[in-house]
Amino acid sequence: MLADRLSLIKPSPTVAVTAKANELKAAGHDVIGLGAGEPDFNTPEHIKQAAIKAMADNKTRYTAVDGIAELKQAICDKFKKDNNISCTPDMITVGTGGKQVLYNALMASINPGDEVIIPAPFWVSYPDMVLLAEGTPVIVECGQNKNFKITADALENAITDKTKWVILNSPSNPTGVGYTKTDLEALAEILRKYPHVNIMTDDMYEYLVYDDFKFTTMVEIAPDLQDRTLTCNGVSKAYCMTGWRIGYATGPKPLIKGIAKIQSQSTTNPNTIAQYAALAALNGPVDFLADNNAAFVRRRNFVVSRLNSIDGLQCSMPDGAFYVYPSCAGVIGKKTPDGTLIETDSDYVTYLLEAEGVACVQGTAFGLSPYFRISYATSDTLLDDALNRIERATIKLR
Image 1 (cartoon, rainbow, N blue to C red):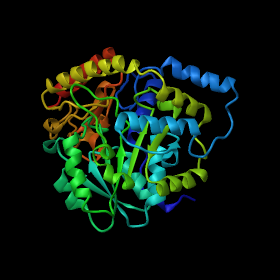
Image 2 (image 1 turned 135 degrees about the vertical axis):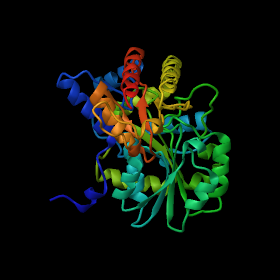
Image 3 (image 1 turned 90 degrees about the horizontal axis):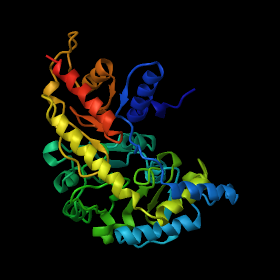
Image 4 (image 1 turned 180 degrees about the horizontal axis):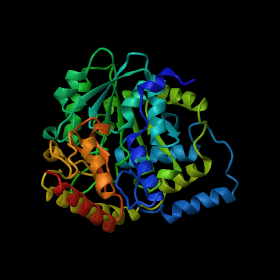
């Protein structure tokens, strides 16, 4: 009954970890879930009120497949104001979350055998999306010695005549590391030499950046590459609207039309009410961001400090998002109190869940081991409890 293509992919590991944590909680277990990639803050009130008004005004019918005109214009205005990217509404697509925008773009552009360069560690869905589109993921490992970022040399070495896309995610899920202007300029120099390579930038965490890091996107520093770049974003993370499911992108008109064709035969338009909420998000006040980011910085600093105090773990300081990606190399080869050997990051993550009820995501899910991902988008109290448990479990390893 099932299609062969399903054998190529696996369920999202991050979704699976959250589901497992929720199952254990429902069964009465004391579990702290650090796997979910969503802010724990509520959607701002003015955005919720815009949704209520949209319903009261009976804006509950179908819209254009890839977004209402007002929202597309607001997205154009956002790209110009924040990223110095000039675009028109016919260069904009709005989808049911950033994930659908990425998926539609790959489905609309990849032919069998086309290659997509994906720096690892990567967001878990990139390779599987490529496989579903009958493409070939080309994974480029970017170790901690490279600050988890692809270099110009590594990019050039990965490009072949079959390369269709390179995907860049900044700040990154899972590492929180961001590409600087200098980083992107070096990559742009390589990409100019290979006009058949397209660039997909996943900028979902654009506004969640800390300290002195300045967010930059590829087209901002290399406008000459705009005609082969899809700049993707959405309202989920910064505006605390994960469940509203609105993502968007700007790109070349032929690609945007192709994305609309795919969407017209799958979901049709994104949720109408959520579109009006997203319009209010993009056009409304963003003063809440300062408070949210201050909380994320506090939590980040706490989690990094605590992890680095635990023998066997080592964690670098991320530039943004709300994840840390600590190394657990120091515990590989040790045994649990019952004698089980910790051979992989998956073993360690399983041990943390079973021994202390802390749910994290193993590094294998993101293409680079031995690491694991912690989301610090939860309360200070829960983070303190979770780190105490991680320390307690790790100390018991011998």
